[in-house]
Image (tube, rainbow, N blue to C red; front, side, top):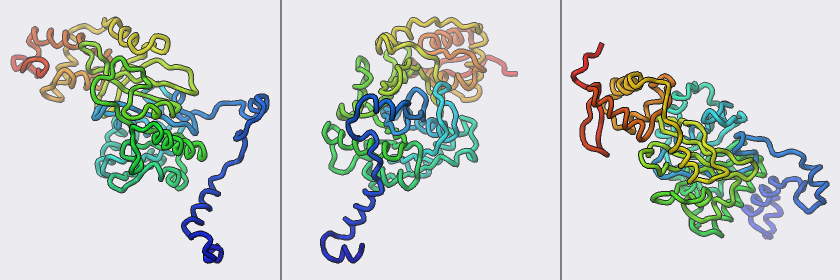
Length: 375
C-alpha cells in the first residue's frame, strides 16, 4: 500500500479511510429491489427487541423532555436495566446487552456519582455493571461523526448519547431539516451496520408543550422526530394540581401503539403510576382520563397522614412536591396521592395539628407539629 501511496495518486490518509470504508461494507441482501415473495422469504421475522415494545436492533430512538426535568436520570436507569437485563419502569422487558453511554454534558465525577446513585436506588450492585461502559466526552469535541468508530471499537448492543445538542457536528444547524436529516442518516447507517440500537437524549423547546402532537415535541427541525423509529417524550401534565405528574409517551414505527404512562419523580428514580389509554384518543384524552380517575384508596386518612409524618421526620421541612417525591419510597405500597388529593390530605393533617404549614402557596412548606409528642 505504501508504495502505491508513494506514487502520488492519493495521500495516505485517504487510503486509510478507503480501507475503513471497505471494512464496513455489508452484504447486499435486501439492498436492491426484489419481488415481494422473495422479500418475505428473506425477512420472515422482525428484528430482535432490545427494549420490548420500544426499540429493536439497528433502530434509533429519541428520548425528549424539558431542561433539568431529570431525563438524564431516566436514561441512566434505562442503561442499567439493559446492561443487567432488568425490566425498565416495571413495564418494558429488556434484552441484556452491552451499553455504551456517551455523555456530552457531565464531568466524569458527576456521571460516576449519578450512575452509582441510580444503581443503589435500583438495588443493583456495581459488580453487575460490567456491560455498562461510560464515555464522558464533555469538552473533547466529540460529535456523531465519531459514532461509527466508537461502535466499531466497543461493539455495544445499544448506544446512549446524552445529550444530542452537544454532539451535533460543528457548523451544522439543529433547526435545519436538511442538515439534521443527514445527521440522522449517518446515525442510521452506523446503527444498521453494527445492528446496535441508538438512543438520543434531546430537549424540548421552552414553555408549555400542551396541545402538541407527540412527534412535534422536541427542539429543532421536524426531521428529528420523523427520522427515528421511536420518538419518546416525557412532558408535564397540564391539569391543575397535577404538576408533579409527567406523561411518558412514545410514537412507534415497528411496534403497536402503547398507552401513555403517568410518572412521578422519586429521586433518583422515575416511578410509573399506572397506564392510561391514549393511542386511540390522543394526548388531551389522556389528561382527561387522568383527571377523572378515581382518587379513593383503601387506606384511611390517619394512615396516610402517618406516612406524611414519617416523610417529614426523615427528611425535614418539605414542600408538597417533595412529599410526593418521597411517597413511593416511604409509604409501604400505599397508592400515590398527587395534586388536589395530596393538597387535601395535607390540609387535613394541618387542621388536626399533626403537622404545621409555613409560608403561603405556592411557596408553602410542611414540618412536624411541635405540639405532638414523638415516641
